[in-house]
Image 1 (cartoon, rainbow, N blue to C red):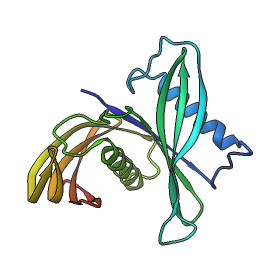
Image 2 (cartoon, rainbow, N blue to C red; image 1 turned 90 degrees about the horizontal axis):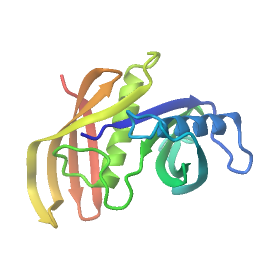
Image 3 (spheres, rainbow, N blue to C red; image 1 turned 90 degrees about the vertical axis):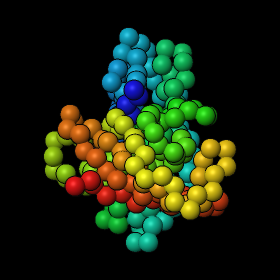
Image 4 (spheres, rainbow, N blue to C red; image 1 turned 60 degrees about the vertical axis):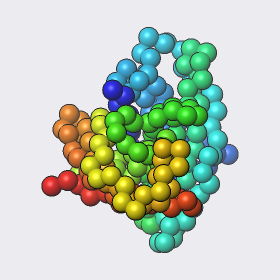
Length: 207
C-alpha cells in the first residue's frame, strides 16, 4: 500500500523567487530529504540529487482574512538523472506565518493515496493537505511534524448520485481517511459534496 509522507514547516513570511532566502533553502533541503526517504517512496541508494526546477501550479489566492492565502508550486528533483515531481503547498496565516506541505506528485493519471476513495488525484492532494494541516494544528507544539495517509475507506455511498465515467458528478458521500501521526493512527471522517462545477469537502476527527 502506498503511504504519502508529508513534511510541514513554519516560517515568518512569504518567499521571493527572485531573492532566495534561508527559508527557501530549508524547503529545498526538505524536498531533497523527502526524495531520499524510502518510507516516502524515495530512493536512498541514489547519491546524486538536486532541485532541477520550480514553477507555480496554482497562483496565490487570498483567503477571507487578508493577508492570509495559499498557493502551490511544483518542484522537480533530479534523482540520479530521473525527474521526480513534488507538490509544495503554501498556506499563509493572517499573522504572517507560513505552513508548507510537501506531497509526492504521482503524475498524470496517478493516485496519491490508495484504498477505496472515490476521489481523483487532484482532490486527493487537496484532502491530504487539509487533513495534514488540520491534524498539525490540533497538536501544535508536539515534536512530531510528519504525517502520512495509510488508508481510505468509503463508509457512506453517494446520496443523490449522478455518475459519469465511474465518478460522482452530483451528490454527497462520506469517507474515512486514516492518517499516521508518527506511528499513531488517527482517523478522520471526510464529507464530500460534488457538482459538475467542482467538489467541496469538510473533515472531522472520528471519535
